[in-house]
Length: 425
Image (cartoon, rainbow, N blue to C red):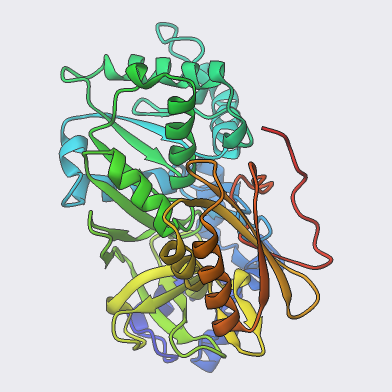
């Protein structure tokens, strides 16, 4: 499948009946596909006789994307499309395939939105999905026989002792399903870091049994958060990158090196104007036969090992295109600020940069040890930000940074943009 603007015969065959692509096929030129274009005249712009039949027979279904980093999109895909993508990658990953082969149960600790989605799915299918022999508190949160979602709180920083004890008791029940007590932990890295801190705060270390393998996904993982996790787990910890509409497309090894996972896909990188080292990830995918996405802007920003536009040389995912910071001094990604923060202090946990009237800014942060970072570290960080960006940035240590409505953290806010409502720990 070619990814220049000349469609191959294979590509034309796969999309030739889809109304959305008719103009591109006639011109033999595929422009960048934006999320707004996907939503235009939905679902008519995607409808074909084959898709109508798939929808009527249950081979395809309507869903909404999570809306984590953009407005929620209507999508059409096979049932459990993302789950099957996850399972396939887990079963093939060189570092963690052993827990798949051992038939380990998967425990997921991520947004409450994900848990609520599973509950809604089960409510629709309760007549065929309910297992009367299962623990009644667990059943509504089982995505399938192998995956259980634990979190039932919008903000993990606000987990109570009883909520943490409940999650640990459910992990203990899952461990009983394996002869060696093994299980696989799927999580947002932030959520797992919160859980570890809560376990320590509430003195529940003896009740927590570490997993045999860990995947963190769902959002950008700061260097300090990954370091915090690696110091506390003696098992493989890998990262997955993907989305509701694409499935999983890249994975890391235990050292943090990324490899493409592009079956039925291909990637290209387009330079982001204003920064030579940041690229926008463009993906063509026919993995979902009901909504093939040709030259789709994923919204992810990446950097490569050699600064080139070669997608096989991706060194890291450095944030979302929507959250790029554009200043007179240049364009900066979340990953740029994260580098400076992690170099200044390994104790910084959460942070949020708030842009005031230029060149004023404020960086609010929490720490793993709940203490402000030393004055010399704070001064060094302020100097680095000023020197590189021109921002006059004050630092404020705080006890709590509220999570976004989507269940993910927003690292950048601007004057006139409401911060998430404060809550007390």
